Amino acid sequence: MARKNIAFPQVLKNARDGSVVIIYWDRAEYYGGPHPGVTIYRGEDGQKFDPFNELENIALGNGYRFVHQARDNHIEKDAYIADLENRIDAMKNQCPEGGCLVEEVV
Image (cartoon, rainbow, N blue to C red; front, side):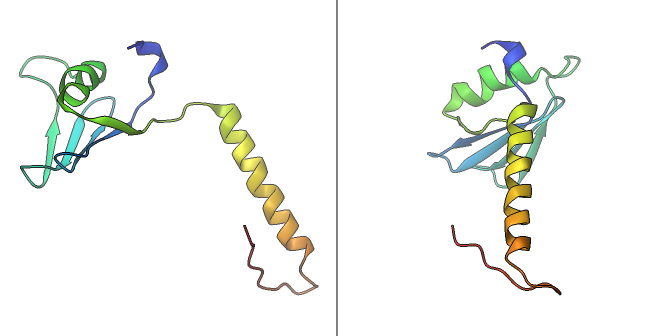
């Protein structure tokens, strides 16, 4: 796994156990599974937490799969924002003076 191509947080799911892990840069949080509640993992005693090791060894090695990969792509974000602004402008243009309620049909 190329370390430079991973952005955090990452959300992974284990369908068999029904559990989810969210891996942040400095910790991991586990939800559900055989032990209900949240377990916050920060690495072994005296060892700095490494999110890449958490992905490779603990989560992906135990049946977890990516359900959301953090996005660190400003071009994609800018395009999404521009699309939202265009949709808002289109709704405003359909309204008479004083405003109105518009339901957009997708």
